[in-house]
Image (cartoon, rainbow, N blue to C red; front, side, top):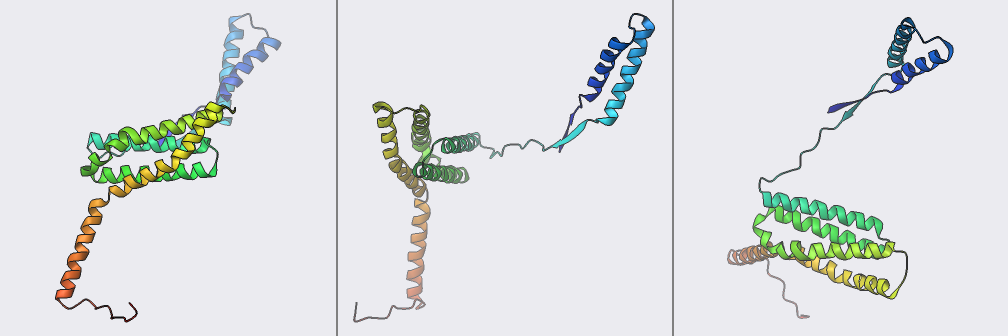
Length: 217
């Protein structure tokens, strides 16, 4: 923990007060007068330092950003954090339960998509269009929606544009969901293959229970 000292201004104020009071009530035209007031103001400053000591605060050490050692993946993580922060800001600014829930969903999908790819760099190519177009365009639309809402007026252009964005949000959420789902296509295929192989082996070994035959279908 780093220590930060916040110096009290009280000693300076007390020293200055001594000069003001002395100038009002005591002579200040000889060298001895000046030497005396300097000594008194110095004593006042020392007293003020004891009465109003400096405050020491412990500040947490700066957290170094996590790095993967891969500049491309580090840049991807940084872009994820920037996009998520922007979504949270927009969600705070934009009223409306429905669009708020939609932005929450976009934020969750974005975090999961990028975090998954950072952990599986071989899938980086699968989200290139998502990163280069879908995500920035979505943020652009939400920013436009926010700005037009803050205009505080109604009109054909503003209402029409905001209505189009509201209609488009369902499609955007669905697209983000599908992008996340597509990242698990290989895993789903592997699981399906493993299950098929296991079922066949269980049948060969006679270890799989046969479903009872039913006359009712």
